[in-house]
Amino acid sequence: MTRSLLVAGAAALALFAGTPAGFAQSDPAALQLIERLRPQSGGQTRGIRVPGAPGSAPADSAPVQPAPVFGQPPASQPPAAVAGPGAPATSVPSTSRPSQAVARPPMRETTSDLPSASITVNFPTGSWAISPAAERALAPLGRALTSQELAGYRFRIEGHTDTVGSAEANQILSERRAAAVRDYLINKFGVDPARLVAVGLGQTQLLVPTPDNTPNAQNRRVQVVNIGG
Image 1 (tube, helix red, strand yellow):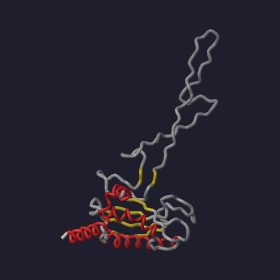
Image 2: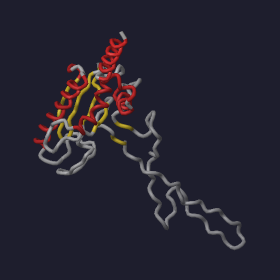
Image 3: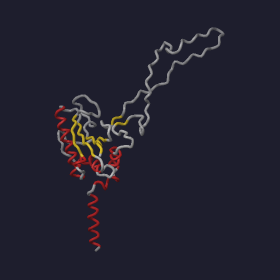
Image 4: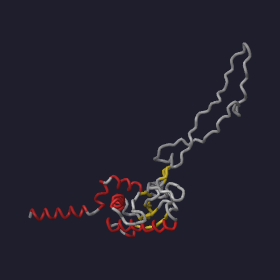
């Protein structure tokens, strides 16, 4: 009887271990992806962090004032009168202005306004094979997509490249890599195929704008976008 219970317990444990959803709550990377991919109340975007938006740090975005011309009084103030002998001293208005910080551009995290996340997936050059390093990068995503928090949503798996090589070759490569990631999530983590759409965007949506033939790891990415229920 005891042996039967032990065998049954081991089988149940193995079944749980094979279910990625069971690890989502204990995987910090998966939890971060769940937070990024789950729609916020009020329809706020997660794809682009805008300084000053709710939940982000305030930014110094005051307009930059034109610098004063040295040797000339400010246009809004008349020249100061020069006091004669015995006359009371006249205060001279200060021409200095408080320094104004230059507005910083929004910090781009993805190129989508929908709840989304970018994942750097290391593919061999010119290949769409899922390497062991790619599996490690995609494992938190698989656990996140099989969590209860995201179970009711569909996702677009976007393949992106940098600008090295021709645009035509990058487009084909991005399509094959997006399809490979989709197949991996379906076969490895049991994600319902109806929940995943794979598209390739090549070098048309660069996260970091660069000239042609410029390698950039941030542009070689898989972007996951929540497209609703």
